Image (cartoon, rainbow, N blue to C red; front, top):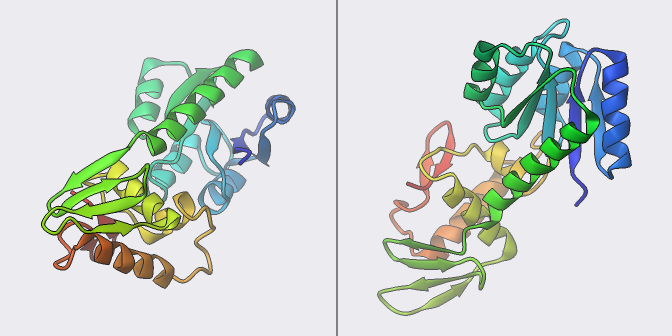
Length: 227
């Protein structure tokens, strides 16, 4: 899959330069010209990385980042800003940004940062090979569950394995159904019934032997969590 990058930048020349450089490097690009578009696209569009200017009309980059933190946890973000003060860098990174590039920057440096962040986010999703839990073990390479008490093996579908891997990678955090649809199904959650997620979780629990739902926990009003 070719990564899609959202560029939120109100300076026309800077925005076009970044868009051209990313396009020539083989990425798909969505461009937002101000804070209003940035807020809308960041929350509604499907993309793998957001390049976010801090100072924009209508909504600042910090406002967009705050909205992402509430609705799209784990979304990779690189801040682009002329505001290089330490307090701004610390604030941006604390709010969930993955990197911070101070203007003026070279396009070569920016492309290297983009590649590094995308590589890290991809690696985070695939490093889990096995997961042991109270009833047995999940082998993600073989896509199967082994129940310790009986020795039974249950094959996981590709989607079930991806769902389990995402929950395990985010242990201790309640994952909203909308986030699962975006990150595991790669679908826009708007207009998609959440029963899709619930049915897959039910099938997954059955194969895990999770009768009392203590492995894949339902967090009312929030989603699902593995502790």
